[in-house]
Length: 136
Length: 398
Image (cartoon, rainbow over all chains, first blue to last red; front, side, top):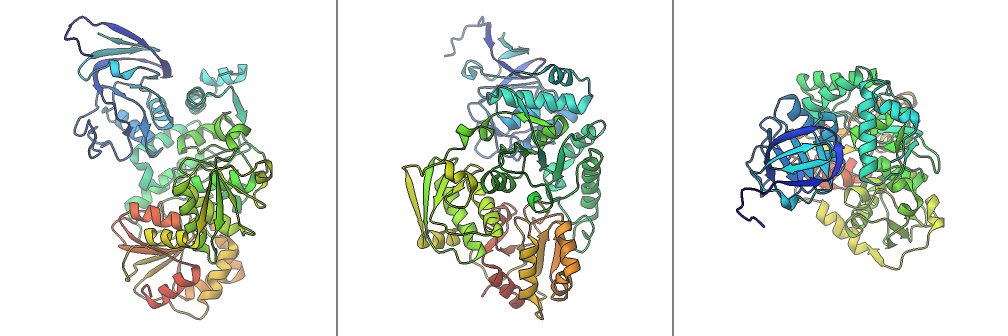
């Protein structure tokens, strides 16, 4: 899919889960993320064993993953990250579920879903504005 | 999703921060799951109370909500991480107690009843048939949907709180008739002789009907306590938070058994015990009351413990709500139980108390209790009430 071409500005339209604007570097995975137990709330590092992004920090990234999983307490993990300045700048999902939706809303992290996330690669500079994702 | 003028006003923040956040949550969940509108709820049960699970992040969020959030409907609370009065007796550390009390203070300020029980239907939060409610706590959700025929999705702590502040929940999932139909027929051809057999049955059903709605036949009668145990177990081990039992639960009459049938026999129940029971004989903790004991169960425990002494090698905890304990006090059960050396663990339970590292092994009547104890790195054994008490007196299993 990667063409090597530097110009690939693209706009993807999705559904607003938590309204807002954000810009940053994408951290992208095709695997679901569990925030409770799967992300260290004091460092923002993904700690789930065997996860594609294990060892990566989600701080200030636009975090791109298909959907959340695991305990609903995970919503509070996102809130805790936000309060200590370690939250992702934005969240893009394929299909958002309760844990991530509630977490993004209470933490005021811009979040949209119904996006074809395979279009977004780790390292892309992307922005979220309301229901539009722009890959720069 | 359709919103009334009034609901739009709440979403704009005209009733303050807590209501605005709550509306944002309800609207987001409504659009994710395709709800057409919000509907009024009769009551709310809020989980996510133990500081052990909430941590400082959860506490901070609750404090923020408590600044201007007041519940609009009857709202009760799940167990906390400790007995709110006798936490010292149960060996809870002081710093934990301090934080847990701050969590409870926040809920108190919101106008929530500090019931601290996973069985709210035993203490006055009892919905009626067909009533829409917004409950968290999977065992209570399953009891409300299945045994009572009330209607609730399996809410998380924050979404249940959101429903409490608005008095409404998005109309989707188990609120709708079409999503309450059974998927699989479970024919029970096994003998259910003691309370833990119901947990074992729930284990078998949950494992075989993953994310499905079971329609159970072959059960001729059941008590409230047996159904309470079955509800906790089926949902813990994987089925949807609703089942129908022919001749016992109210909605069973609306449905016919689905064609796809599985049969649970005595051998399956035996195998369930095998998977739940670890191999050990020295027991550190014996705990009954998952879900929280009813007054009838406490009466039974008192009868079995009369004039007996629990071994000094073990701790014996009886988990129940403070209200049920007050009845036990008046009836004299508490006296008998405490004289034997057992302890009441009110307001809390084995699933949410900070037990990790304190006990190596636990014995209980509850299949759900075993599941969560393994998460706390404990070895587990499940047995009937008299077996638990025999082990407590002896200080070891068999």
